[in-house]
Length: 366
Image (tube, rainbow, N blue to C red; front, side, top):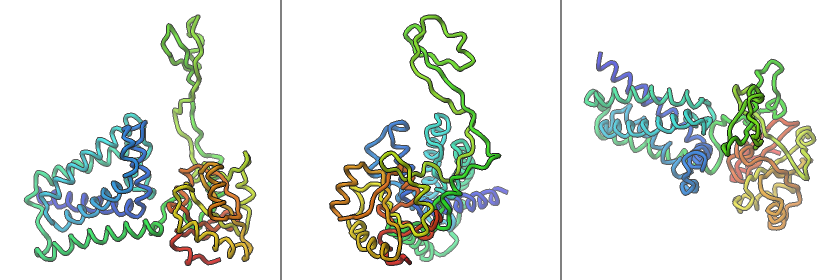
């Protein structure tokens, strides 16, 4: 019985770490954004780690995949199990902290493929912790599956393959796109809210200064506010979150107006997505000039989308001699649309037809 439970734990933990690692390794930039959220001031207040978020993300996801493979084949099982134990204890702390203090809505454990609530993520980690503890107390039962040379070859191959996948997706695009802006998606439909969709339940909170102390009152408590209390502020507290469409916060703003309805009706629309113009790849930006000329000659409307300031837009247009306009959109939304900075998106009446990294412009079919 002990051996059966140990082998099941070995299989369960190994496969889950491989699957979780591969999903994040498919989109390491997306995972790095999540780590940057953990490093931000409202959470752990460690902004000095933010510039290294991508390096840390790659290290973690490659380690997940490799440890999963090591466990399955029984390579260096003692060290593998102890490292897994340390990792899951740390993950459990992070997910508990996120859930208890409600600071990170999604841990990013399975990237954009599967969104878990903070408490679901914590529960998942506790289950994993139980199975890893079983492995910890029964390490001698985790035997190698192959001869030493074969074990070493498989172990090294898992590391090399993981590193290659990480390198590839960073220089192109995720192999599988789990985001709401994948090819074939219609943006207008993605923004729709069904009539029977659950609505958010919001409670108004009024803040009054009572005897020098900020005190919160609900709308039901307004009659109990003591005389002499001074109104400070009002905020909305979400009791139950309603339906949120897959695509939200999408906008094409310029001079205070939103042009998305106009542009999403275009049969031929080419969008250059560059969420951060000052830090966009110079090689990629240079490629866009030639592409613009070709696209316009074939009847495409060409625009840019960015979260940069008007001054940065003007400087970029002068530097690269761009003859198209840029429209503002939130940086998080633009990073969700595309990971590369810059990248190219082709739309037909709001439906995404093609998406390419600036390294793959030659693959565009206009």
